[in-house]
Image 1 (cartoon, rainbow, N blue to C red):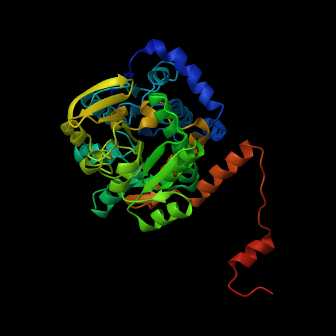
Image 2 (spheres, rainbow, N blue to C red):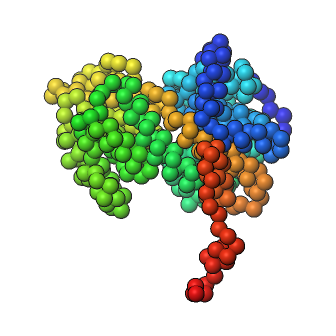
Image 3 (cartoon, rainbow, N blue to C red):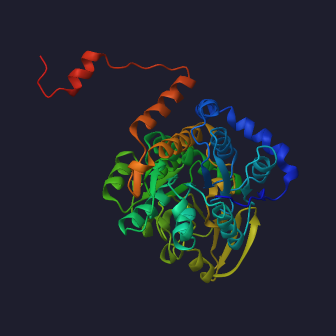
Length: 423
């Protein structure tokens, strides 16, 4: 298929030099992706594959894109969030690495969806998504292109939930690997990456002191665990809200105070949602928050906070700092919303440290290679990352750290595989 190409749509190509420096700096902390890039360059496992990636356009993503292109992929990139793009990185991808990129930090919703449709115009064979917007639009509005698609990957918890629902309804028309479910992804990226980068984003936006602060964490999945533990490490008093009794019990056993969202709303000073759910902070919570409450989200979409309710309650609002909006409530209280309710770690900071994204994007690259080789044997639906890929990412990460571990002997393997009692 012949596809008409453009260079993309970025803010300013003159930023490319600074972008290259930042991309190379991130690469220093991404040894696994670097090793995969070297192998891909030699083996060309993605040769001839048109690939569309809807991801956060950051320096870490750029290194993944470089790896995919090195493997032969005909790649085009767009942003998965209007506020997460690093404009210099986007410029570098276009100008220095020849990867068409459609991403501008702060782009409005109309431009955001125009960019997604622009990458779909390339008629991709493989999709790489972060939140399932690309896949959703492909199925709902551009279904004429589905015949070209052989497989895809999904990076986030939110995206996996959406795709699983599509599959359950019989609407997902090709196999997708849930990279988010890899142990080397959610154990490290979600817990350590989200934990650190979320506090980083809030700190940059507000310059608050965490010590002694009452922090409410909405959701105790892997991301919530990370945020709660890092906030406690900074000296905060952490309260967790949950709807899952097992996770709530785990939070209690981890030493956190657990209560309903409404009770937490009366006590908290900083509120952080990381559930992937709808209106975790709703009108009833906003109505009882104290004057000066800070509200932020680190889940994929900005629906975790009922922003329309906050706007309706306010008699006025204004930006008091970059990424900080002050909403003046009729009763005199002020509530501060960070980053428009979008991913605060990417809106006000740089996202996860490169060292953890190294494992996440290694899973992305190796899953893409696996799909190209094996898509004909996979049914339409959501699939887990093969165990051998997960283990290989872990092994390569340990190797890059100079760490070796034991392996089973033949006798130990035989014992583990036997049903007979040991002697």
